[in-house]
Amino acid sequence: MKNTTQLGHERKKKIKAMVFSVLMDHKNGKLKRRRVTRLNGRLQFYSSIDDGFIQRTIKTYERKFGIKLQEVLSVYGERN
Image 1 (cartoon, helix red, strand yellow):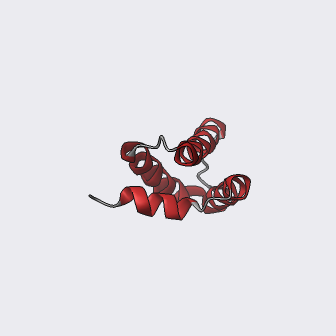
Image 2 (cartoon, rainbow, N blue to C red):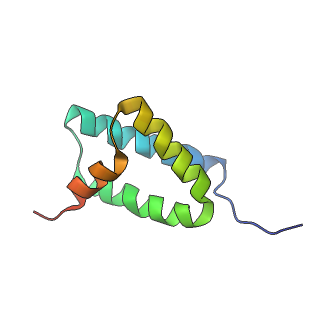
């Protein structure tokens, strides 16, 4: 049996909520750079553990909101 590391139910639930919240706040004009930075860091880390789950989650919410998450991350990630 192969030993694999997984995110677990709670972390998956949390990352889904974070992606939803960031896209919703962006859509409503209430998004803060700090939250984008935090989400981006977690996405990078969690992608190294379970990239398939992260990509599926991002695609699901991008379709739902009609907003590309990478565009949101790049806009809010820039320093003014």
